[in-house]
Length: 110
Image 1: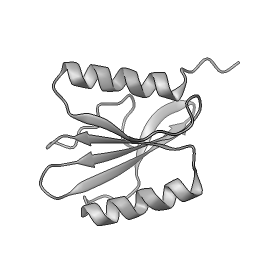
Image 2 (image 1 turned 120 degrees about the vertical axis):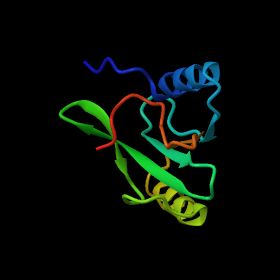
Image 3 (image 1 turned 180 degrees about the vertical axis):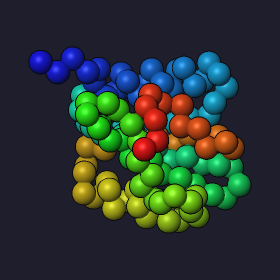
Image 4 (image 1 turned 90 degrees about the vertical axis):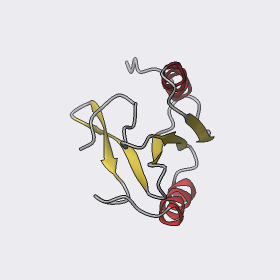
């Protein structure tokens, strides 16, 4: 039996925790409430962005650098997110504003 939290509860819990620490984070797109995957759009607040895609390795949650090793312009990040939304209509998109590029969600960046 799968005992993971529904995506909506998991995302909202992270948003509340981030808010408590003064970290601006917002849901840009809501996906499937119970099992949608999550994409994080990290806004480095200097015109550069990183998109992280939720992945699991050996049942361990982590994140993959979907837009490559280096930050990209917002148009490139948004184009990637638009393609993924067409491919997977159940996906959630969360934007995080953090100059240091921290994602504030569970799991390492692989």
